[in-house]
Image 1 (cartoon, rainbow, N blue to C red):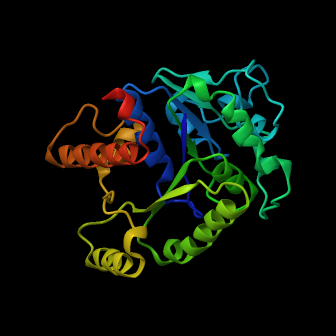
Image 2 (cartoon, rainbow, N blue to C red):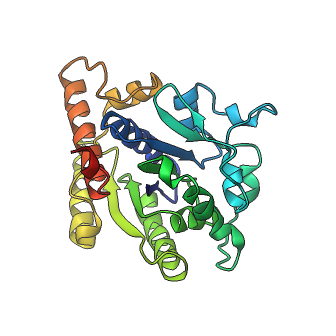
Length: 268
C-alpha cells in the first residue's frame, strides 16, 4: 500500500477537494483505496458519508482517526466502507486531543499512525491522507506514515509566505523519522486564469522554486465546486464546455499524481 498525504499549513487551499478527486480517480482505475480524514472539520467525511460527524456518535463501531495515535490499535476494528467504494477512517471527537502546535520527535504518537496503517497494508493499494490545515504533531505523524506528500497552494501572499514553514516540517520528518518520504511538489491550485496578477505570481514561483512547483496546476472553476457539493468528482455527469475543460484538467492531473506514486502499474 502506497500512502500519500495531501497537506498544507493553511486552510482554504483546496486540499480536501484534491484529496477526494485522487480517491475517486484511484477507485475508477481499479485500485482499493483507504481515505484517512485527519481534519477535525470532517469535510471529506461529509462528502463520502453525508455527515461530517458520523464518527462522533457513541454507537460508531468503525476505525476512527484518533485510534491511529495508539500503536496498539489492531485489525479487529475496520475502516468504514462507503458507497463510493472508498474505505474511510473518519475524524472523531477525540482527534482534537492529538493536534499539538509543537513537534516532539521522541513522542510515541509520531510513529503510531505508520504502525497502525501498516496493519492494513495488504488490504489496499493506496491510502490517501487528508491532513489538518496546521503544522504540528499530527502533520508530522502523518508525514512519518507516508511515502509521499503533495502540497496544494493558492496564489495569495499568505499561503505562499507560509509554504516555507511546511517545507521545513517535511525536511524535519525526513531527517528524524522517514528518510524515504518524497515531496511530489507544490501544486498551484484554484488558479484564476483571468487574473493577470495570479498568472504573474505563478510564473514568478516557477522561476524562484523551479521543479519544486509541479508542471501541472488546477484552475479555479465553478464546476469543481458544484461537483464536490453534489458529492461526486467533476468528471462525472459533465455538462457544458467549461465543465468539460474542468473535467479533463482534473482527470489528467489526478492521473499524473497516481502515475508519480507508481500505483497504476498493476492495473496496466
